[in-house]
Length: 406
Image (cartoon, rainbow, N blue to C red; front, side):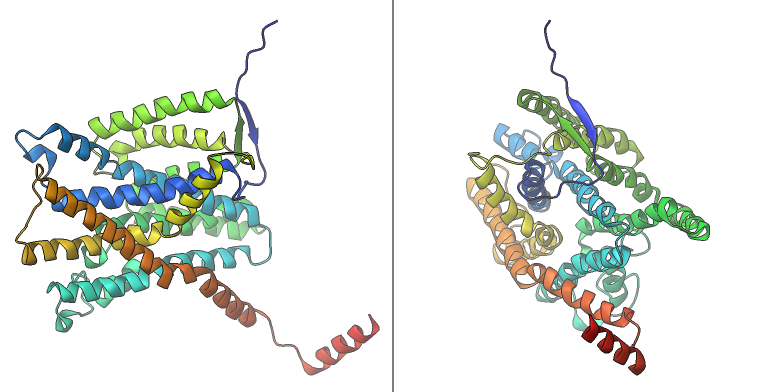
């Protein structure tokens, strides 16, 4: 009798977060690649004319525009990977003492260690470019360089009640991420809190968020939650099945790149993004196994993925301020308001700007983002000290006595 090999789906109580697992390697590669894709897409959009505005674009420019036009899909990858890593990690730790408190510290330090210096540098670059005058920095909500905009963007209020700080329109997705970080533990408490009152209160908070937050943030929470859910799914299948699965995934991504409105993240794009997310997550779930120590691809992919993933967040939030500076310098120093699509030297200039963006983000990573875990440890130590009640002298003496006896 012929045996038909079919994928086997298994639900896991604990997500696999080891660096030597294939899905972890691919996640690192995709994080770095997604940040690079977003930076390349925004640089092309800012420096070159739009493809549709060119009467007869050359073949090479059409190809160039196509491959630098996957920013939408790249941000989608960020959402599902965030759900997988952040949400999956919290589920792993739920029930441990101080799990939610440590989660809050982890999320805040992750965001603010990068955002605070980036916003400060944005101000410096704005002043250097003549866009901002020190005397014009105030606390007006209408001023995108104001103190209110600075603080509000740290709290994820951009696109809700405030503008993106410094005109950095890539920050919109961080508003989504910030609120997903808040809503997910509240959602967990609805099902895991011991007290009924706590569950009711958590449900009320979620209902209030659904009312007050933009519908786009709420609807794309489903995408983020898919990442959480699939972190608990393992799919065992043959290697050829995973390779074959890549074909429809790549084809669907290319199709939506060509036919959909990739500048939006709303109800009109949710359907295609759900499909792409499910296809990508299914592939990721089929890679939840350890890489062989003798694998030819595992080690170089691990090194490259880890290197680029480490500063992917810095690149994502810093690339637009740097692009704005490049645009200002090209206009004032070179007399170029836009790059010419058919000029090879202009393409070399584009590549130089992209490389400088990578180098600037890497330097920022070394100075700030790489210190995240050190800052996190310090904050947790300080919070833990405040959480421990003072011990009275008699109790201390009794403890010392008990220690001598035991």
